[in-house]
Image (tube, rainbow, N blue to C red):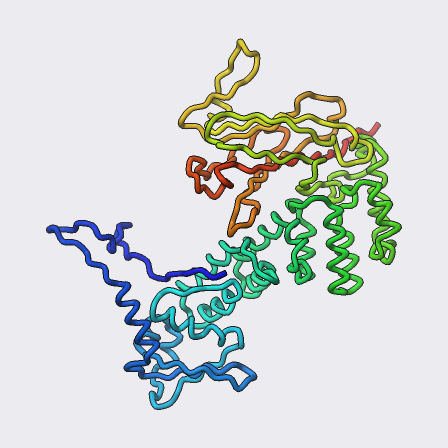
Amino acid sequence: MSVFYSGYCADTVGGAALKQEVALENGATVLNHSMTVVQRMETLLAMGNGSDVTLRVQTINTDEVKVIQAHTLVLTLQSDVFEELLLGHNTTTALVLRETSDCAAVFDKFVRYLYCGDISVRLDQAIPLHKLASKYRVWALQQGLTQYMSQHLSSESPAGHVVGWYQYAMQIGDLALRDSCLQYLSWNLSSVLQSGEWGSISEDLLLSLLQRSDLILQSELELYEALESWINQNQPTSLTVESTLRAVRYGMIPPQHLFRLQKQSPLMLKHYESIRDLLYLAFQFHSASPIQLAKYFDVNCSIFTPRNYLSSSWGSPWVINNPTRDDRSFSFQTQLGPSGHDSSKRVTWNALFSPRWLPLSVRSTYSEMGALQPTRTDGGRPRIIVTPATSSPDFAGVSFQKTVIVMTRQQGKVVVRHVYNFHQSTEEAGDFLVDADLQRRASEYLIDSSLYLHIVVKPLYHTLIVARK
């Protein structure tokens, strides 16, 4: 896949564009023939007319050389690095530039950008072009490529590209790009686990992902099986294997699957001693009530903390057609908790979505209904609330975090657009879809004019404070 990026934009004075073809002072208008100039600049580069400098682009450690006839004026206007290189340079000799093979392969595209201000980019060309833009200090192109990478994380590529972009961002210290890649991998982990890109993840990136609670995937068992595949493929050191295995949240894996892994997983059989204590704790978690467990163990540790699991035990998808039309309600069930003690107990949840809902403090109370009802106005914003249908003594020692996942389609692929979290103490997510324009059919928050949500309910256990006698 390639896209067209233009580095030219309208000049502004006080925020007003100067290139707009609008009536000006004294009835004058602007005749904009800038594209003709760009075409002539491209011809000038292609033909080499009036060239006063020869660029010899030599690929490092090879005999490959690419020769480009260029013009000092253009190069020095666009790059102060070229200005330094060409200062006092003898025009009778070529300027030799040594580049890595990936950068040399796209150097002609890079030079064309200096002449024309636009460039077509494929996924595999983003990093070498970014390297050239950084090396020769062409800042507009560098920023444009960073934006391109951030916006094309979901694009399809044979071997995957997000992991490579993450590693490159770490190498150059681009924190914004690094965080964008890490968030994409975390929010779309199930699809990443099934891709060829999973095997190329570095040890540091793998450990970083395993520590996160915001991973979105089908289940913890899916993560364990993917980890086993990664270890078989990469053959890391025993220390790395043990570190990654200890990052798995075994308390979130049902006991019947833990029994099976103990007997059938070659990885667990080989490294059983290194995680024996975690498995023992997980089985205790599954055999006792949360209140009993909380008397003796710290249940706030990661092994008892769920991630965002998409399986039906944890929540439900919800597709809202024409979301701006009116209020919608929806009911679904989850397990009370992931422990074997609670997994058979069900909790019914009521979800209510309103496209135009005033904040809690100014809603009207309908006394005749005996309940709080939403007030819809043109000035309201989208809101969603998720509440249990009934209360239960089983809720003691447990609070519920609700996570609402909003899906979108990017480059033809369904991915996570946003994640909203809110807790039992708040019935709604206050910033839900605050930046979304649901009235627009092409809104990036909609798929075929519908809002695609997935609601996840995560029970969080609390350690009991026992007073000393």
